[in-house]
Length: 337
Ligand code: KG4
Ligand code: ZN
Image (cartoon, rainbow, N blue to C red):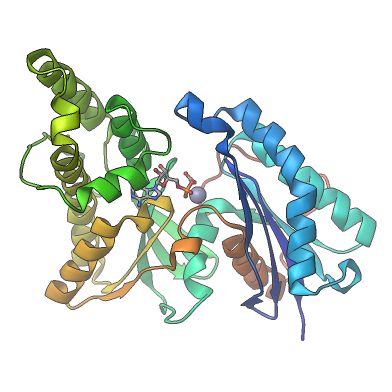
């Protein structure tokens, strides 16, 4: 039953390892870095130090719980980019060392392709072509997925990512990092129509989230001038209104992309795809438009090595290996693999 691949993810603030055997993901070990919480965002230097501390134990746990010996491995896969350079370097160096020691091939993975390929871990799996809205702390993209490894970004943010808008808004309200999941939680008992926010309309299928961040900052500042406990008194309604606004910005473009391409298979991926409001509204829109909707399990939404392992499986089948002198790429377009 081949191939058996060990995959490593270290692009941001999760150190993760996963073993995949013949296309079946055996586990998904994740060490999250709590060290960033007090800073209200990921501190790159601390992220790379924490990866360095965690990676040996995380990889060992992945091998142990999969009951796989190092000598059984056919390849080592790692996230080449995009991501934080210092964080990527830890995973890349570790993967190179292991591939050299075991004398097995090395597979480089594009993190954004892997978010999309998380849809092939469990059933139901989309068929090609499909559209994937990839939404995370660093990216907001509409991807036209033509094949496992052939993808084209047809719309994307021209400034901040939607996850960043969630996290910055949470920070403005005094919530801890990462604020996205908290905004999601408080929204569930809030009135989405309580407050209105303006939107920057971009041409084509592109997005812009920097304007809403600034507008939100001024909104909270002005309301607090009138009532210092405005946020505490209205937290749930503010969260619900902001979340609904961000979701509408995303889904308007997805609907437009589906109309333009004629594609009715719609998937979501990335950390923000864990958002319960986005999942619910996407399902409703799917029913209205007769779409087939694909939503990954929660553990495969935020950063994880299982998605890296899934992508590595498809590359292994094509014998798409990389040289040992490969370097990480902080910026890595989705079609470069
Ligand atoms: O994909 P990911 O783990 O890392 C990046 O590649 O960025 O995404 C992290 C982002 C953060 O901005 C976090 O706040 C957001 O995903 N996030 C959420 C939720 N869960 C995670 N945003 C809104 N609602 C959620 N439930
Ligand atoms: Zn990610």
